[in-house]
Image (cartoon, rainbow over all chains, first blue to last red; front, side, top):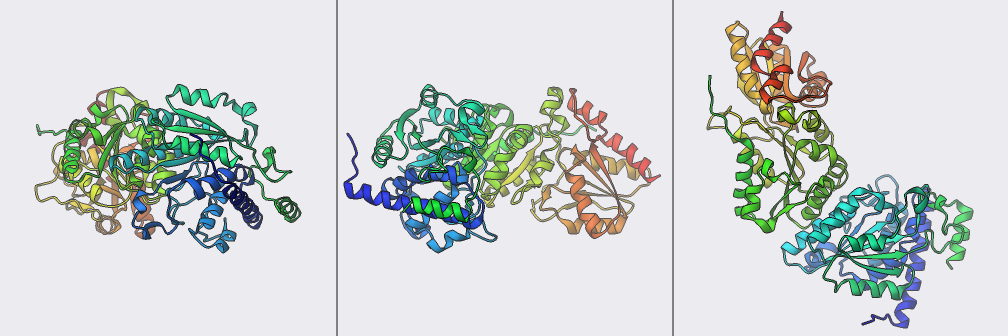
Length: 278
Length: 311
């Protein structure tokens, strides 16, 4: 069965993701620090997930169904700007607060901090830990007979961390079909191409060999993303969605350029980027 | 003197089972060492709440973090070396930074690991754990203290590190003993020198104090099971009385109990402190008792050293 978004839904997603991209750039520009490349590659998936697929409650524990929410873990915590922007869009906090990103005393820490911002399930930032966290959450939910999903967002360079593969074994061994992992396959990391730095190779084959259900998608095509997530929800195994993405997506001079991994745009560059996203 | 020694690890295993019966949120994780850590007892009674994570300590620690996020109270066990060394950053960045309700109860800390040698002898675990914000660090000295510390941790929110002794230990406390998170215990009063210890070296320290008293030296013995948060008051008051402090621990003299006591005294009441334990070196293979003797933390060796210090 193909899960299809309506034309108006697709239009809305286009508008929202454009807004998120602009906010990401303004936040990073305002802080003069942050990670535009890997945030922009994640925007479309996060937008579809948070607005179409995930059961979540921006009012947090004020909702009586809160314990039955789906969980989200941003394993690649450096894409925090994108997460904060989509959370603000959904109503977790006021959008004005986005410009406090990375400033002293802000709820919006450089990498997500659960004790600073309500709605962040757990602090992340140090790579390689999110998938194990997801396994723990998935085991806990299963013990309580809660049928929620645990979504975890991993960077492709991050799969160089050995602990990711410990967790991949863990999820398969425990048959955690309530885990849906995304790998943001933007093919770049700080020092250059993932294949030049330390080749990741055929991720799909690797996950499959470990006993996972694998799906591949264009990480910027709303229908494909939506489809993959809805398919993954029905899997009897843990699912990884390997999303083909473009680092810096949406801003011509940032696209496919590793130097924009962790660099803030200056005034001129921000102006040009916002112009392109009009 | 022959004393009945009890398996502290078995006491840990039995306590977990007891806790598991009362509270269905208690879950236990181990990394292929459940026979050594004695979490196997819990595994037998509550197989659905026991997770053998295989030889993957990093994954184990962060999985425990995830379980804690869903309201579970995970007890995580393996050898101290792998719990605090291999998975230190998972403990720091995921468990403690998020202030999660994870209890790390590690066995095989210190030189008393014995025959396995230096690769398995964690001499730095207390140091590694106490430097992380939100972490509470406990080093029990006997069966009773182990049981009470584990129960206390289960009922108190936040991350805990409990070092469960590998060796069998005699009772050092009497039946009236009550674990108190904010109190060190004066085990014996004295006026000439203060001896501060915990864990496996506490019994040696008490024996040492007896030997010293036979030589006319009046030693005060303080047990500090809770290394963090440390009871400053009891330590300062004793230092004021004796003006001379010696710390004794089954751990490197860098960063553990000795360092903690130095921090308290240098800021509040500076007196001379001598740290006895494992010097800045690795251990080696041997029987636990032989190693304690070799590294100078048996009662006889301690007595020799302390007499030398006083002279």
